[in-house]
Amino acid sequence: MNDFWGGKTMKIHHIGYMVKRIEEAIEVFQGLGYEIVKETYKDQDRRTDICFMEQNGYQIELISPWKDSALYPMMKKYKNVAYHVCYAVSDIEESIQQLEKVGFVLFKSVAPAGAIGENAKVAFLMNAHIGMVELVEE
Ligand code: NI
Image (tube, rainbow, N blue to C red; front, side, top):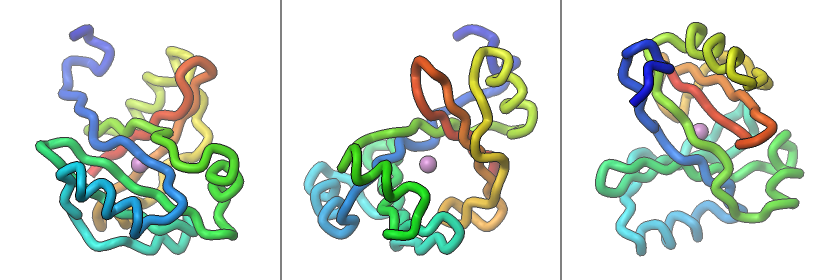
């Protein structure tokens, strides 16, 4: 592994899936062996239902936008799609700066993430060649 993250551990926290119908999606992932980590969380700020599931140490996040969510047009366009990878970092501000140095642009600045935990905060960055990356500090 190269030293991009300054010798600190860098771990994939989850893969984010956009889904149209979260209950049906949960059932399908249960069929693949995933278990619900926490009951579906209603994220009032992001206007989405969020459910974390886990299988064999791999975590996925199902995101189902409400009609008034900023993510709703994206769901209409792409339907059901895995659209972001989230990395767990120990210092979110420092990691944002590091990603900006290699061509990422911050587009959702640091904000609380109630679906993950009381003290969790996340940020989203975009890159023209690989799309969206999320960072989480817990
Ligand atoms: Ni996520």
